[in-house]
Image 1 (cartoon, rainbow, N blue to C red):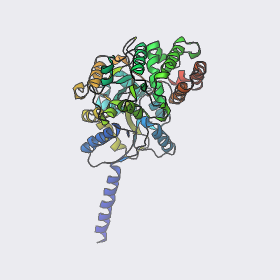
Image 2: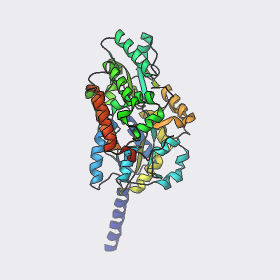
Image 3: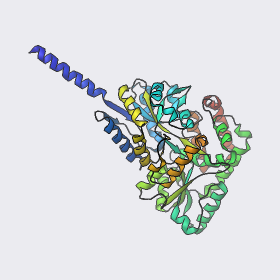
Image 4: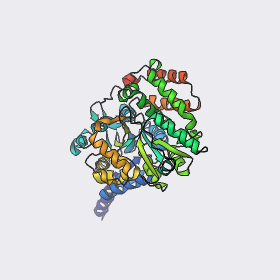
Amino acid sequence: MRKFLLIFALIILTASITLAERELVIFHWWTAGGEREAANAMFDVFKCAHPDVKVTENPVAGGGGVSLRVVLQSRLAAGIPPDTWQTLGGAELKSYVDGGYLVPIDDLWNELNYGNLIPKPLANAVTIEGHHYTIPLNMHVQNILYYNKKLFKELGLKPPKTYEELIQVAKAIKKARPKMYPLALGTKEKWEAAFVFDSILLEVGGPEYYVKLYKGEINVKKDPNFKKALEMFKELIPYIYPYHSTLTWDESCGLLVSGDSAMVIMGTWAIGYFETRGWKPGVDFDAVTFPQVPERILLFHPDTYGLAKGAPHPDVVKDWLKTVASKPFQVRTDVVQGGLFARMDISPCYFPDPIRKELQKYIITHPGRLILDQHGSIAPFSFTQAYWDVIAGFLSRPNLEKTISDVENMLELYDVKTGASWYKWP
């Protein structure tokens, strides 16, 4: 009898250990409209493939992951990491690698042949010192101008593709709708202001200049391009929604739906948000990449997941990452959330909207036109966060000389030239 009880206890103990091992503890920031639905979709796909795994989410409200990063960093510093977490490619990813919080997954990349399935600029964004650390599940294009299609048709306006056209359209809207602020914006988390400024910088300086600036290779105090871009940014202020500091990115998109604004510069994820508000792409709203001079460049960043060093359930994480890299996962998740497919062997026809169909086709034929944006970040993440503060602050106090001086000082303080040397373009 004692032998039987001992065997029974061992069976129960083994089963408990097995159950405990089949768990995935994950951090992500997909909580806004369109994002929460995408999170549900990605977990549905994973659970279908691995029904024995318990998914434990640790979502933290806050677009762009600003709030989540604070909580995550405290856990990483305390040595209690989740199994995996959502991180942008680029310098943000590099900060986790430099901190020793992620382990390379080169073997998994080789097993999946993933480097040959995605654009090279995307692979470069998650490759640090020759090693792959995460699996990108999508691509988000940053420099997209969304507009109220019905209003534009009513006023006889064409969507702007240059800064000059943007100013002309803004003036026309203000004249026809005096109570409307033509360009929506929400800068509660600061990065949103840098999105708008990035588009201006790209037009003024071109793609090579853009990359050199964020690699710390431009002397901003002596650079006419940066000053000119700030002057243009200042000229735009009267046409921007004035209470932007109280709004998040999704709330700024909501200004189009409510009729308070007519345009917004935001990433591809805004498509999912508009759809949750009942707006149909190609009917209620449309979009153009902005700017399209001197050439059409797509500023992008990916959402990615990796394997935490000291992950409680490393084998489950590998199952998760394989699923993230799969076609079914990306189709279900990206279509809902608003991103583009990381994989180039997925048909653009899966997208229900004309905006992403066209963007995906363009990337398949022009992968070299992708440049990592300042959200994923070429420059060190410490610089980027401080830079967001300065650019957002410029909107309330547009002091050109002070802003130029602050940015130049930060480029030196955070040693951007050294910290961004890892990034290669083209």
